[in-house]
Image (cartoon, rainbow, N blue to C red):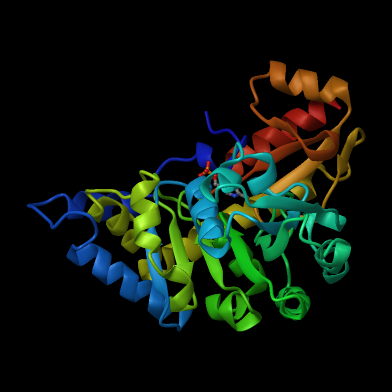
Length: 339
Ligand SMILES: *Cc1c(COP(=O)(O)O)cnc(C)c1O
């Protein structure tokens, strides 16, 4: 039965699976020197309209941790939101990978950083006894399903420049945000000031294999060594690259994200007026956070629905490329009946 516990409950989308099967013929050069990897790297440069450096790792934790580590020395710090995945869900991997760069946590409405909160942390201490702020990390779409506008990213860039901070974007749900904004990948990243992107494919329809995209070549220096040392270099790289080709060709990634976003909005509209259900954050992308009275929560779980307690006493429902209206209707119906 389809569940909405997370978008990584979904399987591999057909286009990606086909690309994977097609790539499984004959031999290919190992460690990324194969034709699939060359082709997808070019495709990503084309999509971002930028001569960027592209790398692949197995998951999002590695993409975030290694890219942050490449921007920081061990005595630096990273400004992020207090609910950021790098803070709450990566078991200290960013600090581990960077040999100790500290995360500095800011609060901010709807899970977003803003120029004021960044400036506060950047100026809080300037003495040698405190780790020097070096990076701002933002998540797009973010941990509570909210999307930064291009204008908001540009405002963050402005304050980042003031304090000489680089910008990292955790794009585990990059496609979902892109579809919401309807802008180009370039506009949402380097044109707005993003230096490095963790580009998520897994939640969007792949089995695994996130990309790291450096928009400034000099920041990518020796990154391949970092990837290898961290045990993140796939020897049969073609199977990550082929998946990405299946996802990015013919705009499959956007179609997948579109479905996920539409199902989230449909679910939110279906439950927002039910007594005992309270929508906690704007539904900008593919995640819906609702506060349920305990009676509804317990009964819904008893009926077999899987969902997770999240930030601020909320329950999180996440939709993916494969979410069907029929199954969302069943969930809405069950919540209505219990209420
Ligand atoms: C899922 C997710 C990641 C990646 O998590 P992994 O389990 O390491 O692949 C990164 N950032 C955010 C915001 C996520 O939701």
